[in-house]
Length: 420
Image 1 (cartoon, rainbow, N blue to C red):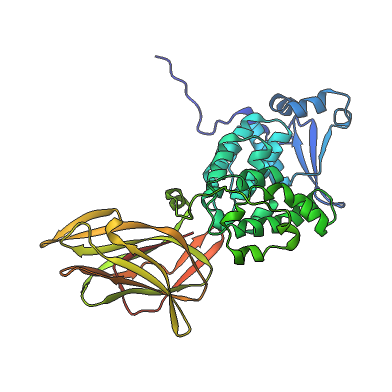
Image 2: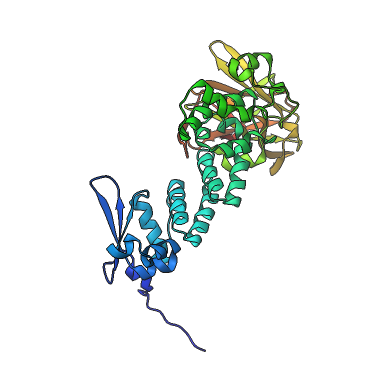
């Protein structure tokens, strides 16, 4: 039997030559401003073997062959280092999605196809609500079909958030058309489609070099108007449209899906976790106040986790959340817990500890620094809620920190609050 023994310090030729002056016969100059530039030593044979673009530069009568240098003005030094790292060592470590997008652009420009595919797979793993529009744009430009499909699915499912975001304004015209024409766009009002387009159109004028005036904005807006479900809008919503837009709209009978919480959104959610304690509260009387809370930023609540100790596996109860503002309360939603999917836990005498992961029928927008109360009503006898304690009051999301404040002495039954 033969056996190959390698030294622990063994490294390939590319590893030794990466950013090495040894035998370097070409220099990559990355200009960062009029006064300064970065210098990367490189090797013609290595560059030409991995990139057809570098090969043409170094073998043809371009200036790069004569001067022995390649000037790059449109890519950051950090990204060039990553590009060279992959060319020489066959690997790269990406820290964030922005670097992934910029490296994708560089890999495509210099036709390093394996790196394009690597970036594609990386971007698929980091898609989130905050970056999906940016990644979708690039996926469309470079025909990354798997990334494009995953992005479009999230954009449609979270349309009620993304059409209101600044990121929507950066989308290319074809990307916007793909979204607006889709009947699976999940929104709470057709008016928000108009509002999103009205914000996008001036940015589109800037992108294509048109003056930002009413005529050009309407010109960019008009192709989309036939796909807006005008008949789904109320008279109040129609009255909010600019007269110039209203005159171009024609009635249609298109419909979109009902505003809902798709299961897929759970993959992009964040959850405040509560731990159960030994104390329990019997569910008797008209209503049990389970939790009073507020958040410091606007969030969409899409679900919660709830626990009861009950003799029946499917408890007949209702959870109601109300918004407290001034001296009045406004009902946000009511959910029948009998329809939730319950998971049975420990047996306690003649009762079972049951927990449900509940997705709301519709996303519930929560305003910052506003108190919300979650009440349990219509309860059965001999049913209890365990006391729970908040594990951490701060969640780190891709947009920053979200803080939760409790406004009640005790929390009953709640084991998780799920937000987008």
